[in-house]
Image (cartoon, rainbow, N blue to C red; front, side):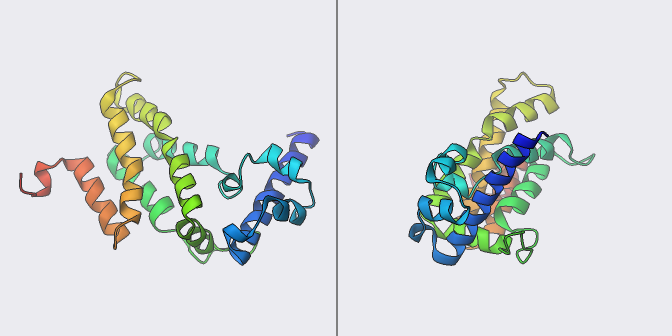
Length: 197
């Protein structure tokens, strides 16, 4: 990576870190784009070159998210089904943080980030839309792995329902139990769940 790219990456990180810190300290709605730009020592115009919206400041790892989903399918352990691999991945990244007390370089914990997103409707909605944008890439990975055509409807349906399961689970009283129920259904079908017709 050249000097210019390193400088851009550093500016982007400084903006995202400043935003997250301010949002956690003061609340998402109380912080303006100008506040974030000032904290990162750049202009608001510069901030908008890196992040098109206030919500985007919180979710700056879209490419990583897609790569991780595809990897959950492609790099799963032998004997692990695609639904099993996706269940574990969704549970790990969307339902319960691996270490809620782990802190980033900004001093904020993942639990703080998770609480911010879940507790802020604008961020929760944006995060869900961003998460669902991974559907096509995930469907292609599933189709490729199973030898199906790239436009296979079953692969697309599994991708859609696997991704949507996190919103279903997060709305339940017991998110982990709800996610397991959703993935049991995806893995085994309705008749295998023991439910009445």
